[in-house]
Image 1 (cartoon, rainbow, N blue to C red):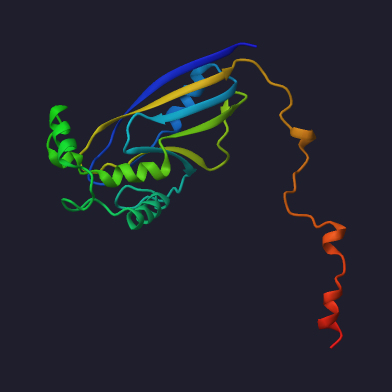
Image 2: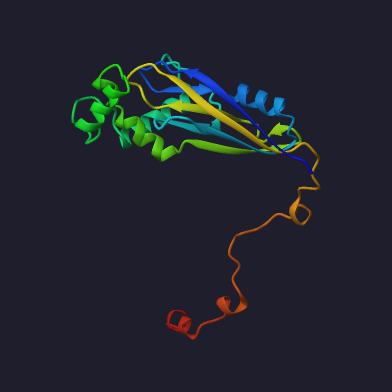
Length: 206
């Protein structure tokens, strides 16, 4: 059975004044199709520490901030947990050495390092997602879309997403485990656990 690896990079432009949610579902599906891999996995990974990848339902409705309703609900929750960086020294990061490093690597100003909220939010969400490919199709269910989230809203930035498709170009055998038997994980009491206890008499024979 042949094993194959196929890699591509997506270049994105974030707007900057508010966290940006990029729907990259179309591109990921096109990369999976172009890979020629029929069965395997695709890893969608952020190149940046203030960005995340999320697989979530498409909410369809879009508000005046150009965010889907579910995306804005998510942003509202994150703002309660991790408030937007609104004033200097609100967070410990960035310190003076980090600010100097930003100048060393030609950041446009010290303000561009005031994105601590973006770093903390990306820690909660993680920077990658892995999905299954079955018979050449990304297995996302009926509603799932792939989103790249840029939590950094200090300045507009170019962003990169790394896509790695791995798997086989051949068919696989029947996927059903135990013939598709439905697994019931609900606890089942033993006869000993359900047995009559003499202490019940104290309540029943009053």
